[in-house]
Length: 243
Image (cartoon, rainbow, N blue to C red; front, top):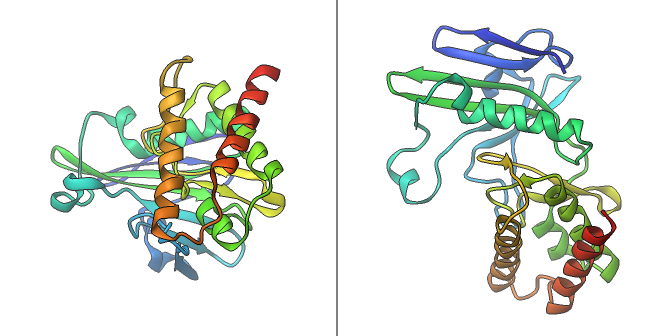
């Protein structure tokens, strides 16, 4: 990776010069691309309407605008308090993804990140290289059941992230994705960080489990059982012992 920061009229753009030779503010708008389509999923797994697949006829990227969630998001859609360039959410996620790629973990490669300041607030965007053929875990298990090996591999994959100290702030059935051959990928590392081992790992697993159970409550036809979760944990702890 060749990290370059380009100052703009309202903020700055951080990009990998090995991927993009140049980038301007217009690249973070759908109008700048020959094709732009919203990310969708069977269970509305495209986030809060903030993510697009874009391409210029040669390269494909995922473009995500940072929106607030929860109760705060009803009042303040996409403004964040400015705490300095190194603390803005887009740059932090871009750099974390770069570290995870270097560690060989299955995450999208970061291409560019941007912030735009307005007084004490800023807005932010992130661009990553699109991983072909992946779909959310929710879509995968709504279409067909996963055998024991599927869930064990999933558990082992999540354990590899935890073993590297990777904290994911929102580990759920949308951000955990699978590709051809049911290969694991993990997306959306907003507020993610690297941490020493601790109780956060169990809380991460509990959050993921709640996400699976919530999905099943939404649609009882979703293929998820207690046995699946036990297989997941077996894969997770087997990987832990072999590390």
